[in-house]
Length: 420
Image 1 (cartoon, one colour):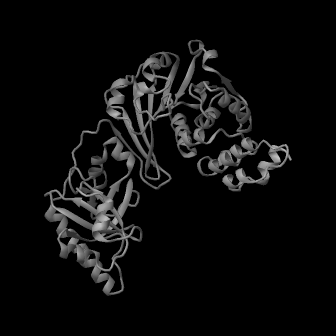
Image 2 (cartoon, rainbow, N blue to C red):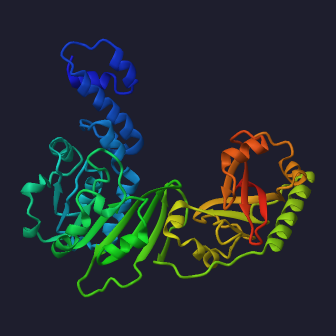
């Protein structure tokens, strides 16, 4: 049996069981198991790659660290917006890695250079790129690539965020290569430069140290902040200015994207504790009346709770939601918003408030009623979720959501909601 036959026969099998089973003669089982595991991971993370027959996959760690398909295609859309088709002459990815981002962006350009320091990843790239529809891709090692001889429209960089011991790093200067040392050289050879950095990085500090930043993209996927993208350079006669545009997106959802100048300087609109308690009580009464009459309150009426997505919170622009969506903040530090209008595409989670109470024993007992399980979130509250769950004696899950938070008057409350 050949390696390819073994891989096709066991492509959907459990890799751990295969490792313990007897291996047919002539099969390199270690290589085959790496390919089977790689394809199975790609089915979740890189479906277009998984659907391409004959691709070779690296060890598990390289696949875990690479960009997902959704974020790679988002980068492609940025390039399509910034660079007109007639100007897409040449680009280079100076930190090629597995080549996921490169394979999304390179088809836009007539010439595309993939530069990677690790020989085994270069070998994979040379095998995979023709299968991915990239016959024009040129693969090179850093020592053989002369940036000073190039005229490029785009340079892409995703510096490695691990030290020599394999520990994760966040700081720009701790990544490999050190962007701070090479940014001026790159900007001297390329019109645009796009850099992917850690979602843990402080945006304000990064803007202080990076040159000619035009845009910052805070990219989340289904509520989890995945990466920060810094777009640098642009037309020589267009100064970067003091307030680059920050784009907040939550891929894989129907959330509205938001674009603002950074740092955002607007103020939040706050709702007083009394106003919130009064409106929440009216909401609870309407809910109860509706249930008793067999006609529950409609999603378009009542009081709604909004929790901004991770991109907005990371960028620190969540207070701009007050004006855009006519909502009010419960507390300056809570980052929870309420409004009487339902916004279907509000960028974050959306709830209808059913009831609320203070943290008195009687109030909590009334609010919880016969609940046995609920999803619990704490915001600006002195107790963590695990401790509060034990206190309330509730299992995890179900259709009900409880928010433990603090109101503007420093009153601690428990809000019961349902997802809309």
